[in-house]
Length: 126
Image (tube, rainbow, N blue to C red; front, side):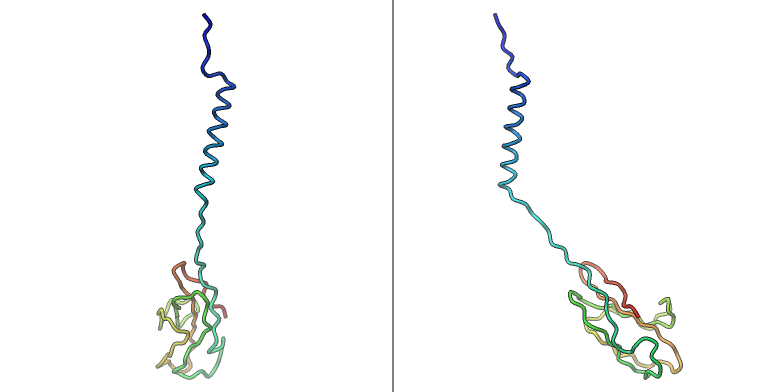
């Protein structure tokens, strides 16, 4: 009596190819997906006062350009250029801020960055 092998190597390869083709066809019907990402805002450009301005009033209005995709702006004003001695550190939605009561003959440093849900952009340059 002759015995038949149910699974020959060739039959195994044919079955494997069929299963892979079926899987590939099913995967194609599922489609593909992608996700868009909100970028962090661009760097803010400062408008007024200009860098190293002299004879600025003691109640100046700081002003900077708006940035696309910004939700809020973080403004820092400090007595040192390493920004450790703050007189202002706030978040606000507009592109101006009125300072008041500044001391005469004192140098102040200021910077702004735009923020949204993706994070904070770079601090403004000089």
